[in-house]
Every structure is written in C-alpha cells, then in structure tokens.
Image 1 (cartoon, rainbow, N blue to C red):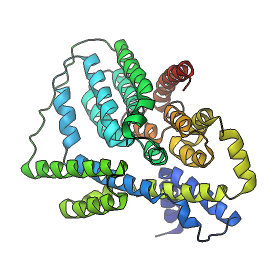
Image 2: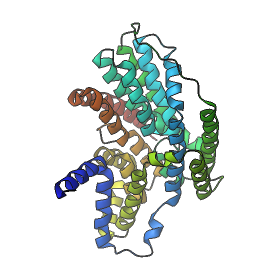
Image 3: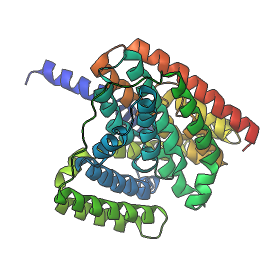
Length: 376
C-alpha cells in the first residue's frame, strides 16, 4: 500500500473519530507537563467504563435480534396520518433513549424514519429527523443510563435513581409537551405509506431477548451498586460470548477510549496549579453556565469530564451539560449521527442545519427559562 493511500485512510479515520483524536492529543500533551507515574491509574473511573461497556453489549444484542425494528413497525402500523406518523417516530426516540441511550435510539429509528418517509414530502422527513434528534437528547436526560454523561455523574452523586430523576423531571416533562406541540405544524393528512407487517420473532431471537433483558436488569443493579460493576461486566461479557460474539464488533470502543483519554487529561490538569485555578474559577459556583457553554464548543460528554473535578455543585453541572446538549450540532455528539444519516441519503446539509438550529434554539431557550423560573 502506497504512502498516499495510508495517509488518506488515516485522514478518513481521524475525521470519523475526531473527538477521540482531539481527546487523545490533549491527553498526550498533558503528559509532557505531568510525567506518567503511579497516580495515573487513579485518574480512570473504571466503574463508569464497565457500566458503559455492559450497557453497549446489551443494547447491541437487542438491536441484532431486530427487537427495535419490530417495535417501530408494530407501533407505526397503527398510525394513518402524517402528523401521527411524525409524532410516533419522535416519541419512539424520546422514550427508548431513556433505556438504550440517545445515540443508539437515533441509530435505530432515524434510518427507519428515512425508509418509511422517503415517499413523502421532503420537509416532513427533514422535520421528523430533527425532532427525533431533539427527542433522543431530551428523553435520555431523565435516567441515570440515558446518556454517557448521566452514567458518569450519577456514579459521583450521593443520590438514588428516583432522586436523580426528580432533578430532570420538570425539564423532561416540558420537553415532552414541546415535542407534541412541534408536530402540530405537520398537516393531519392521511398517509399513503404502505406499512410492512412486523415479522414474528424466531424462537432463538425470543430467547436471546429474554437473556438480554435479564442482563439489562443486571446492569441496572450494578448502576445502583447492588451488584459490583466488575461482576456485572464479566457476566455480561461471558453471556454475550456464548450467545452472539458478533455483538462485540458493534461495541463503541472508541467511546471507551475517549473516556479513558479524558480521564488522563483531566487528572493531569488537576495537578497543574495554574490551569487548576483557572477552571476552578470559571466553574465553581457557575456549573450550569460553564456546562452549557463548554457543551456548545466541545460536546456535553467531554465537557462533563473536563469540568467535574472543579465543580462544587454536581447537580448544576448535570443540568448544564444535559440541557447543553441542545444548541450547536456538536453540543451532543448524538446529533451528528442524525446529520450524517440524513445527509447521506438526502443531501441538503444547509437546509437540515437551518431547521436543526432553529428548533434547538427554541427548545434551549424554553428549558433555560424553566431553569431560571425554578431557580434550581
């Protein structure tokens, strides 16, 4: 292979994994200021990494059995209007993201929407995908396992699941109402889409779904610290190895490596007095604003890992990075999934970004207004 081809493939890979590459570069540079030593191992939150790994295994297993496709087809088969179809596709993302995370919900249901709505008006499809993106980001924020930043912050907060969900409940409820109202601009016309019958699951898939559901419950118990996280991770890995080892090919190992690199970077930063002082000054007492602002620039997951060591109020940081998933296309990396899936099929990046930005600003303003009213 020529040097040119190697460079081209490397460039394509770096472009695809841009967040990891930037994070790795930050971690590497920080090592020149804080030489590697025994303290490095203490930087890494293995509990969070094990939880992410276990959940990705289970959700990937569900996807491979076709469970989510069957769910989508079954639900949409009962809908007969364009507005109803849009609302259904949006709510599928909203509610499933609470369990399977925002990015997996979009990877599952955006392609489904594109296939289902390809024969309709271009605006209906574009608008539905934009609302699906909002729904996945907003629905996922209410549960401790809805997105990576929640998984991490929940492990750092002395709260139970119910207490955690109470913090986000007002914002999720408002989001639910706003999403419903947002579909009202779609005409309530009969749809001519031919719905496919959901295929009956084979006995093997049914058995696997029962297994993955049991493993999912095990993951929840590990999040609640009822079962040690390493025990859950080992059991999940062994069961997946026996049931369907191809699941491992669908694990987002780059996300795990991104977390690891950020743990190293933030750990080193915390040992640099000048940078430490700066981040403490802009974060301490301003966690919500800092989380919101940094999310717009570097995405909410990296913002969480960067700011958490300097936050005095983790609850405020939680609200900042979750609400901060709205705004720019990079505010939540899950949003880039929708952008990529839509533009690959339909093009029109500029039009998509225009509608996406407008709707994000509206929702962001509404949730920030609620934050100001509640004075959390």
